Length: 311
View 1: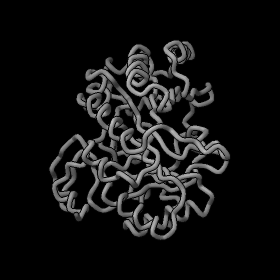
View 2: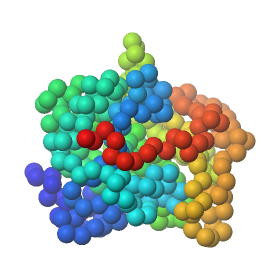
View 3: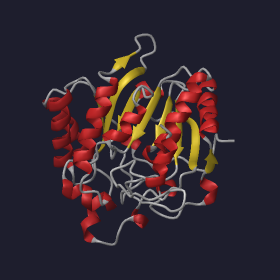
């Protein structure tokens, strides 16, 4: 099967735009050519992902979700993308980027928001492994994925790192114009777990080798929804997955709609709100969880996107 033909009638993600991306653009705002914004060692992922050397992150340009609070708005397509913020690569060149990151002692290859480029990603992983890539490959996702597309990555991905942003259709519709997000995220995570199973950690290094780590960014004023998400994940997967409870919401007020429905997003998450969610996680029996301290709330955690590492 020629995976690149999938761009000719694109249904890679739940948006099902059905556009020929060789000729026009869908909701992700990306053509069929592979646009990448950054490749570098990243030290601010979860401890068993970044370790001491860093995670070899590759940021893909464009996104299918367009959350109103997006922190990577420079490259997501939520606004105009500057040509200086990306480079166009082939799958062969992308495989070389993976190998370069491994040579820099990256603990893993971390593919950030790549659903709209799954054909390129699958091909690049295959080429890189033929060339000797030996570190785990991690798929870092918004969670808004189709099971059918994820199956194209079966056997190629070692670690899945999806978000679970919303469990209420109304929240998903308000913040991402994707009222079907909860159902797709549940099915996607189920497929990810089917592929890679229970989390496995290297006893010598303390780094993750395989498994699913689910992130939830707690939004201001949304503690009840956060607790409902924790309930669902723990009831469904127990402690076979890890959950990362994130406090780092950063308001980008200039990009928020001028509408009172978004007033809660104009402030940072309070310590009380975050601790309420963490305490709830402990109370229901969640053992495998990451929590963040106050220092995580900073725009300094948003990378510069200027095509770094893609020369």
